[in-house]
Image 1 (cartoon, rainbow, N blue to C red):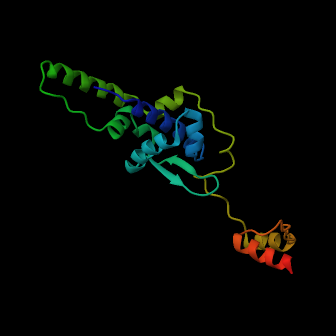
Image 2: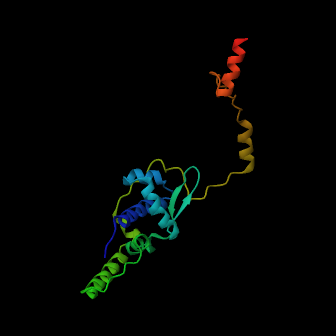
Image 3: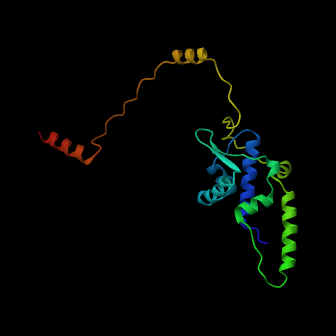
Length: 182
């Protein structure tokens, strides 16, 4: 049985996402890329597999990112390896029964390792950029009259006018030159 580095990375990424989800926040892919030291293109492959398996979901907008959909107690290392690496079949070579028994033993041990257990054993720092941007917690609703009074009390800001530095296209430049000749 072979456990790829992609599976190991996927487990670490899910730990990071689970820690943030547990606190009620989403974490962005660029932030995970920075924390794990991985390229965005490589992470996109992992995220696509995890999203297709229904493990994570994405959130758009400010405070957006990814959060865990499933309960961390129900996600084992075995599940992640099967999602990322797929089913591995053994050949008909000599000793195939031995390797099959070892694979069954490994899968049993991997099924005991869950995200929840690993979260309890590890310390994962919640990034300051994700604090205050809740994705999972419902926001308290304000009364309409409060919002209306806030809108009325705000003064409109004057528009900033950019000074024109010169023509902004070749056609404008031609007109500029013609006007300058006269």
